[in-house]
Figure 1 (cartoon, rainbow, N blue to C red):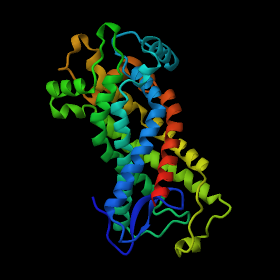
Figure 2 (tube, rainbow, N blue to C red; figure 1 turned 90 degrees about the horizontal axis):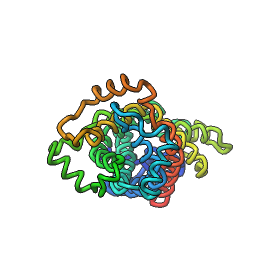
Figure 3 (cartoon, helix red, strand yellow; figure 1 turned 180 degrees about the vertical axis):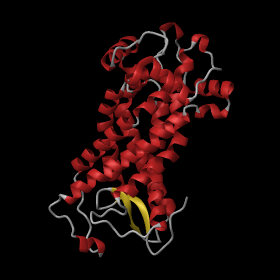
Figure 4 (cartoon, rainbow, N blue to C red; figure 1 turned 45 degrees about the vertical axis):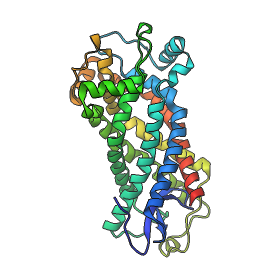
Length: 343
C-alpha cells in the first residue's frame, strides 16, 4: 500500500484539528516517515491501554471460555475476580500479558496506519470537498475506512490472541507449572501446523471489521460534534477555502470521544469475540487435552446458543465495556498527543 502522489498527499495525523484524519503534507515528507510515526505512536498508545485493561480482559476470557458441558465455574465478573485473586494473587490477572502487550502494539499501530491508508485511497479514488467540520471525508466514508483497517488488522491479531487466550485460561493447581508462550506456540505448530494459529479467524474478522468501523466512526462523530459546538468553530467558507482550521480539541474532549469509541467497539460485536475466545480455548478444557477436535465458528456459536442462549454470547460484556471506555480514552488521547508532538 502506498500514499497517493500529488501536489498534496494525505496522512493519518493528529493535526491542529485535534482529530484522527488525513491532513495535507508536502511531497518532501516521505510516506515511510508517516508510517513510522503511525507505528511508534500507535504502539505506545496501544501498550499503555493494554496495561490498564488487562486484568479485566483476563476475567472476560475466563467468563467466556467456561465449558458447555460443566456447571459454570464463575457466577459473574466479581466472583471471577475473587476466585482468581484467591488462587493466583493479583499478579495472576496479568499472567500472559507479554503476548497481548505485543499484540496491542501491533493492533493499534496497524489500525491507525491502515486507517490512514484507507483514507488516502478513498481520497484518490473520489473527488470530495473538505467537510465543514474540517474532516477529510464524510463520516460514512470514515466508518468504511475504519472497517477496512479492522479487516487488515484481524490477520495480524488472530495468532497473537490465540496464544493470549490459552495463557489466560484457568488451570487446576495440579497442572502447574503453566505453559509459557513458547510452549503454546510449539504445541500449536506440532498439532495443527502454521495455519493453526488462525483458528478463530472468522470471529476476529467479524469483531475487528465491525468493531473498528464503530471505533473510528464513534470517535470521529463525537469529535465532530465537539468541533461544531466550539465557540471558535470556522465557517464553511473558510474551511472550503482552506484559510482556517478547526480548533484544537481539549484533551478531555478527546478522551470522551475515545471512551465512546471503546464502548461502541466492544458492545456491538461482542458475541463474535465470545465465540472466538471459546474456539481458541476449547481444547484446553477437553478431557485429556485432545488437540485434534476443533469446531468451526458456526458450530461453536450454535453450541453456545443452544446451551446458554443470548446470555452466553454476552457473558463478560459488562466488564469488557467498563474497561474499554478508559482504555480507548487513553489510547486516542495518547496517540493524538504523540502525533502532534512528532508533527
